[in-house]
Length: 168
Image 1 (cartoon, rainbow, N blue to C red):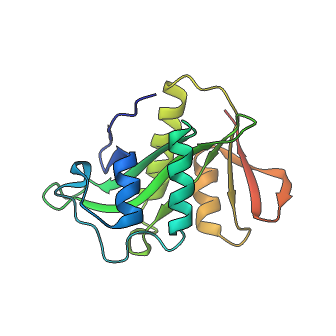
Image 2 (cartoon, one colour):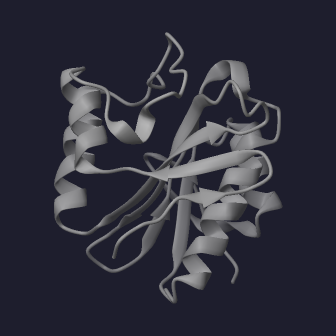
């Protein structure tokens, strides 16, 4: 599936490509898709390590990663890379939603809006598989984002955190 740019009132979601992941891993030439976009010094988010990007690269090649970079569209003259992610498709066909946003853009509604847009994209793309999300039990802002977007706490808990399942 070829991903397309998604635009909302506040965000532009740019599909993550192999060029973008290679840029993240090697810090080489800036991909054309990111040309003219301000990339803050604290990019990428602290949770996105080289190992994570290598995993994303492998998943992208297997068509198991549907991911986007989130660009703030609030100031058209100063578009800023503020966050990223989308879905990882597990071997059991579940779609896992994941995301990260830079600290200075937290608590401004960007993540809630991006998750809403990602879920709309998922539904419009015709996917029917279960959507799951995991977060740490004490990560209340993330839990709030997920609950605002129709997720509910599930009965299962895993070592990696609290499980939430979207009710479609």
